[in-house]
Image 1 (tube, one colour):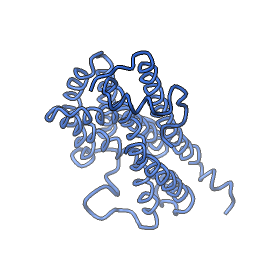
Image 2: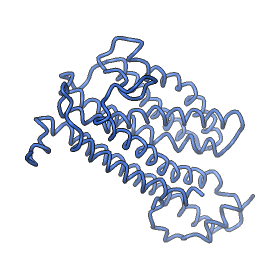
Image 3: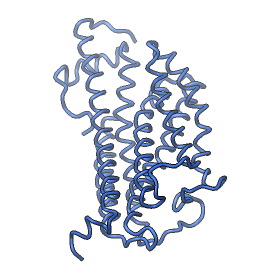
Image 4: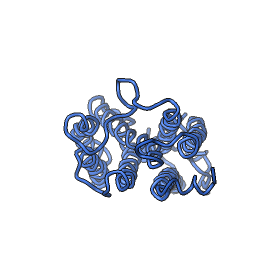
Length: 240
Length: 57
């Protein structure tokens, strides 16, 4: 099922992201304060928001795996980590690049930025902890504890700009109130965000399949599938 | 408006383009690494089954 689902997630995501990027780069008018630098918003915000969303998915899957002892939940949790880590690192880098012309510095120990760095450490710690065990079921249980405990950081990242004085601007779109952005500037974000979400879904499908292969390598149902599959010469892209 | 203006973006061009470029690279790298990990795991399982076809439920 995951294999059939992948192209339906990936191709629409590519189309949506291209439209969003084209709109963000060329079609929307420049911001009156930030000028053209604000165009970074269309890549930075979806990536940063999903770095939090993926962590919540990872922690929720880890909790489900712990409580109901579901192997597939642990597989989903493990699959989330590398995607989330790369998104968090990218959010920090694009944020630093945006910060240079706007704040006059590449880096500042602002609350939002610092808590996002902690999120990156949590992802890296989760991956390192997993890799330190040979036994997958022990790795699942131990890493799940870290994932669940670390989820405390997510609301702190999200609401840090409200709870403390921060150099980082407050929420523009992802808030309960009306977006503080005109529709003529908002639409590329509304295209880009679901595009990046679909992309995450497509990559997650492949990573979950890999995790299931690791966990079920001795299961008869999987052996039958692998033997009747593309074989050793399997070189096609697993995603397309 | 000139095409050069679109790329220059009033001196913010390097910041904007580097962000979009890095994002594209990260998205491509994620696809590549997920696909590669899947292919390696699949091949490992396939090879193991060729040498030892017996498996458990």
